[in-house]
Length: 297
Image (cartoon, rainbow, N blue to C red; front, side, top):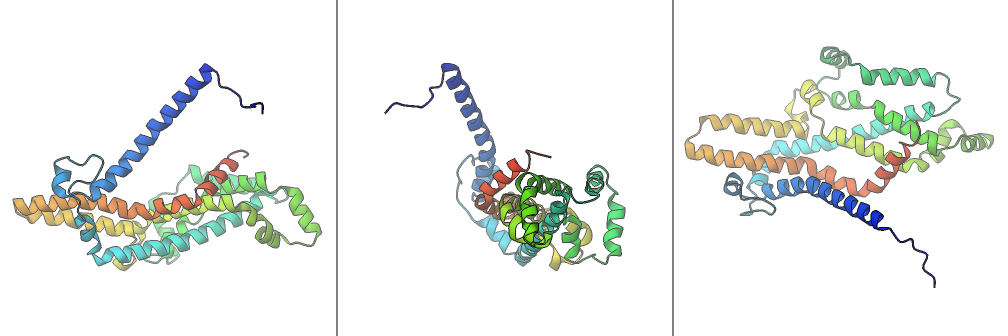
């Protein structure tokens, strides 16, 4: 059989070789810090202090993780963070789709004006004091809603979702469904949403990462330690470790500093692990949704 493959010229091969080499360097730059942090979290304090850790754990140890999980507040923080992330993501994705879908329709009166109002919120901020007073006036201080509601709708996410609906769901499809007696709500639930898995995956990942790493809102609005998310709990552990170190002897101080180094890297792994494990399962939808949402605006 005659071969139909296209042979690359010498210039193409050189260019591809340069691209592959560049991508390999980028991969090393991104991957090495992750490997270093994980390896360091499983190494001993002496190995960290002496700079022996380079790629693999040296004198493997679990002292950092043991010190973290001995604190019951860590498990409470984990539970709170999961609650905030799951409930917040569900609410945020629902509200974003409910706002983006009507804005994608040419028949929706006033959609351009609403989009202008949304974009203005990206350019101007009312400031911390009005933000705090607004949350206080709605009686959301020291409640789960203080963490979830203020971040429930992101303008950038609305723009991406609206662009996806415009480029993926043709008006002819909704018109045909309307002729068959399908209401707008039924069309959204039965047709639009099943066709929108890529953009839903994008929204889920964006909002989940945002809620998982939520720190500022919880720091400002929450007072009860039983409601602290994981990020605030880890902050408390690091601060407490630093304060206790000020009243110790030299040997105890050295041991405490070694433990502090282990804690730092262990806490990074603990706080970042769930999101890193979650991403591969929706990676294909995430990439597809981002590409489709960037074609038309």
